[in-house]
Image 1 (cartoon, rainbow, N blue to C red):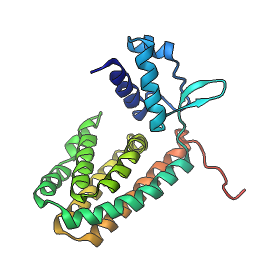
Image 2: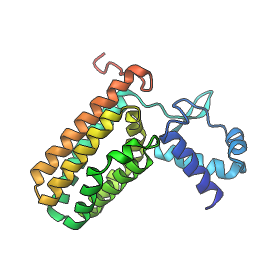
Image 3: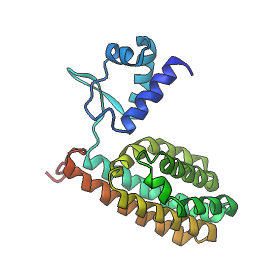
Image 4: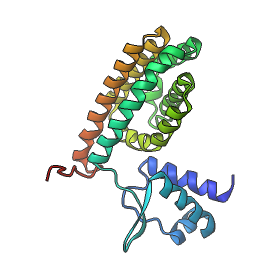
Length: 221
């Protein structure tokens, strides 16, 4: 792996895992020393992270990890609901049932994954669910648009990391979506997706009180 790719993946993962919190200054010299590489690949990695919307330039501070606010999360879920509910309906029409039957068994047995403190296995299962849905959709424009949201979705998903009850409920909601896709029930697939996203959003907004999300601004002012 090239040094710039290594730096990009490392910094991105640390941002998504909240190891680099919003507002953290990402100076080239400091990050190069921390990762043990030269400044040039760090500069390239930071440029990519800026394009992803995970890093931004602030006057007087340089490059910092972007904030995640209540407003931005709500906006993300507005777009996500429109796209993912459409994708779920298409997946139910065009799916390979065998692929989703395998996923259904994994979600039904996901309690072991959730008992792992890292929960890496569970998040990998969710990633493979997303990939299976993308493949079933068969619409490159829709899939590419969803891909642009996935980085930010992964970041806010981690806000549920400390809520095992919510993660268990989410696994059951994913299983219901999979059931609907296997059955070819487009209405249920869309509805189950909307319910899942609604509950996920409410859970994430509850974390605003913990200080991990910037508060909402009054858009009517």
